[in-house]
Amino acid sequence: MVTQHKPTQHSKPDFSFSTELSRESDDYLEHALRYLQKQQQENINEIFWSRLGQKPSFHGAKVLELGCGLGNLSIDMALAGANQVVGLDLTVRDIEIATINARRNHPELRDRVEFLAVDLQDYPTGDFDFIVSKDTFEHVLDLEMILAQFHRLLKPGGKAYVGFGPLWHSPYGFHGNAFGWNFKNRYPWGHLFTSESEFVKRWNRSTTSQISSFADIGLNRVSIVEYKRMLNACDLQVERLQVNRSTEFKSKVFWMLHHIPILGKYFAHNLYCVLSKDF
Image 1 (cartoon, one colour):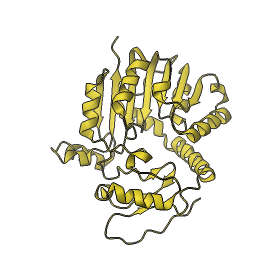
Image 2: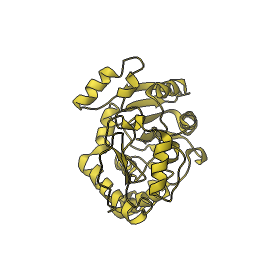
Image 3: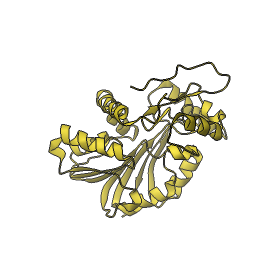
């Protein structure tokens, strides 16, 4: 494991980076395996489906997952009876680990699941019964394009199940990690009080992978208001759209607070929706 600097006392939000942020491969594999184990132990997929109302029937279905990461949800859908599952992600090493995990632990799914490091725009064929995306939309820089691709790839009557968070303006919208590396802001909403230029400086001092903006590490900073606007304006029909889906008491309080004009976006921490394509 990569050791971390012990947090020091600061008068303003402090981002604590790994001491060797650029040393990735071996430590990330360990991180990935722990993450997969945690998902299995905590039944994270079932939580995802419950927040969307229910898990659809995947029997005989053709499914695409956008932002599949390490592939746990894609495997879940294949085990639920999907005839074909395609997991797409732009992070090559996640696709490699997802493929290794599927081959080693689910050889019976060899002909039904594949993982590809392919941009959604470049995926050629559609006719999917379902498109599923978990914890990805908060990283997408061109969401309107992605929604247009959903419309292209879904068959008539097909549905998209999408859930994501934490949203940028929520207490921990900074996410606390990127590319498998922990770097934390110890203060709720603290990332909103630290300038982008200051963050970029700290990141670039900690790694050889230089960045120039939050977008370079996949944080789009889109507000709940903009998400709702884009979802309602796309060519898909919004069947379900709910904010702050969680059983935690804090989430219930935030659900009430997120209705406050102007300030509400600071209390919207996740969004779950079901979209459909007309026949």
